[in-house]
Length: 433
Image 1: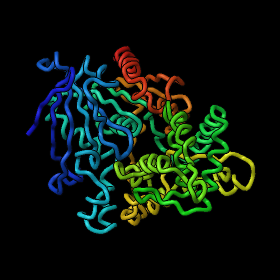
Image 2: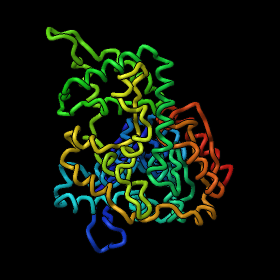
Image 3: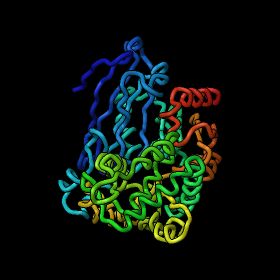
Image 4: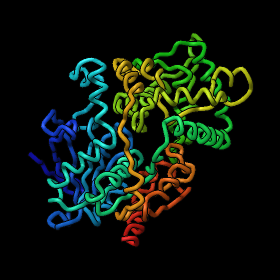
């Protein structure tokens, strides 16, 4: 049963749907999906076109906006919006260390999670679309991984789309995960260099923290074991528009003087715990590399293997010399399943997913080359999360796709500049339509 309620300027309706776990076996097990419908209060009675939002990730539920925040306000000028919690996230049959044991052991859990990639998410959208729109096509807005899903949508069910909008989410069509991370580490190194150029005092601060972690066993208040590699992974912050500044403020209060000498402060540890924990989005860790699988090659902890090709990221080597400590980010590593109490019970499941082969292909070049759906994509220049060269190669492969390449925003441009970003993309697809 749907329930409607109001926030400033908007009417919201909670909606639920039942879909097959495996769309190739519609008579088999089913799962529940949740979505929040939003419509402008002054247009609640109007027959409006629909826009479905696919969140980034994998592993994050849709934004919980208050009223007409960020890009939602602009979207509500023209659309009814469906904020979908993708399967396994938010209220949509959540998958985590507490729920996955209901499936059985690690092998059963890994088999279950193999149905949580972009192809299944798109088929969920097509299963619920007739119930939402009455069968009419809708516009999809895909942020980051949601953009990956959108390219799969264009490859498999373009008849369901009236337009497609992507922000920071054009995937490489054929690349193995190794190719993705081989392109990623140099980008991350550039982001770290830019951070240290902005805040040169952070070079010594980061080295001091890393040295402390190499010589002390630090367990954060929530049980997370803070190793030097875990500390380095805070570099994921550098992929957002304000991330460099937030990292700087974090580092500046790392230590406090105690009777036993200088120790990592409680405030620092508490903030780091929140930044590093995967308790709220474990699918990000479990599926981050499998979302790239498309052939008989396993992903096999790609980011960890490829990192060995970039020895400048080795903390011990950096501290043995006088160079800066390099942060990492936008990568998942096996040690995370040892450090994070939210992931520890899922270590064997993660190993099985990393070893899995035979992933189905996600993108159809021939169909994309014949695309007739109006498509526009925001491509962020030197995006830390999605390689710009890969994104532009894909843009050229999709017939009629129009790009807006900008260095005004980082990967979180839809959050930071939401109304303007969305307005620009809508103008591009309307010119094309």
